Image (cartoon, rainbow, N blue to C red; front, side, top):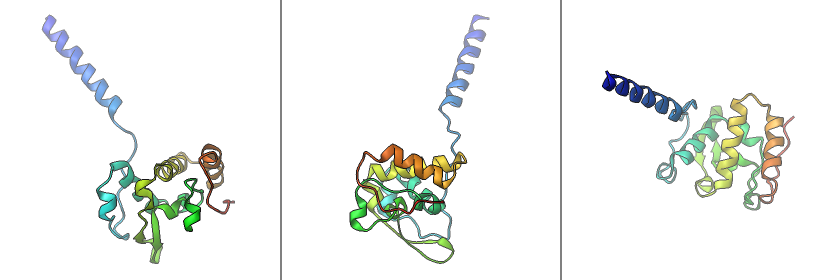
Length: 147
């Protein structure tokens, strides 16, 4: 009988650990209308690949927040420019930017902004919160404030 209780205990413990380690976050997939992710993205971490997919999925969110890594000096106007080089018809990504692959600040801003959007925050609120969180990191891009 003791073995049965021990087996039940460990089974329940295993289920609790599995549930605790699982993520409620839905895995994004890149819509087929976009150019495939380049090798320089695919050969990095899952987090970076996910962030590039977020940029294609939520371009209006990333376009509404500044980046604070100093990339304004190379012509970037928002966090979106760190991941997407060009859009075509129907907002399809036709060219990717390699900048976000090597910049943790860009990735963190994009991840935070999309998470806030998924939580139902307005673009204006997301912009305000991103500025407040990252303003000490460096010079912001000249991103127009959303209404």
